[in-house]
Image (cartoon, rainbow, N blue to C red; front, side, top):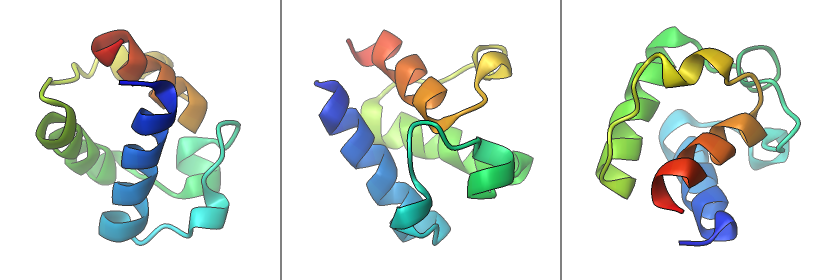
Amino acid sequence: MTREEVVAKVNQFLVEDFEIEASKLGEDKLITTEIGIDSLDMVDIIVRVHEEFGFKLEKEELMGVKTLGDFYDLLMKHVG
């Protein structure tokens, strides 16, 4: 799976399931303050990642994730 495919899938479920405006989604955007994802949303996102990509993220892995680009990079480590 390419990075572009990962980005497209993640952005699609963020827009559809979390009602985030597509214009807010950019690699440099801060997940909590600029996109508005809170800790409860993150739990749902982890579940969604498991459904879409077939692996579970550990909360320790998410500790260094600040931007959406960081999140894409983390996913690429698992799917790449």
